Image (cartoon, rainbow, N blue to C red):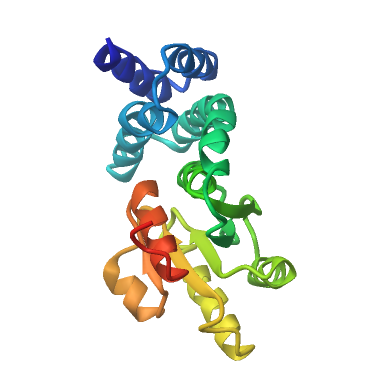
Length: 218
């Protein structure tokens, strides 16, 4: 039964159908499915597929945006369930998330935020198209240990470096750690800009965030 449901979940994201994604999310709760299973074995499969297609030039921005909306609709339904699970855990740390200036993609970042919240992090998601000073300002305001930045375009990934350079200039590292992600990001790039962590997916991002705050293996 769950295999079928996972397939339907992935498909509704690929189709960009928010009504169906929310409905399937509700169905998963009724069936007592673990919300993280619904996300990682169901909806995310669709997200990854569309992301791959976009990378190959076989899907376009409107499809990516619609898939993102459908994902958000599903996550909105599952979030209260995730928070119930997260409430039982100790507070891991504070994270500021943003998509860098000039970039409007949100799908991966939103998911990372959800997974971090579910894992006991306090997350402030600034949204998309955020300049370096805004991102750093918010991190200082809430005393965040981690800044997570996403970029989907090769033209905007340089903004990740700008934020890191700015942090260095203000003497804020290593107090504030930096995680980066997004389709064009590679290990080489991460080393080049001296980021503290990088993950290809939301599950990996949680592990890295825990390691960065010294709470790995929890």
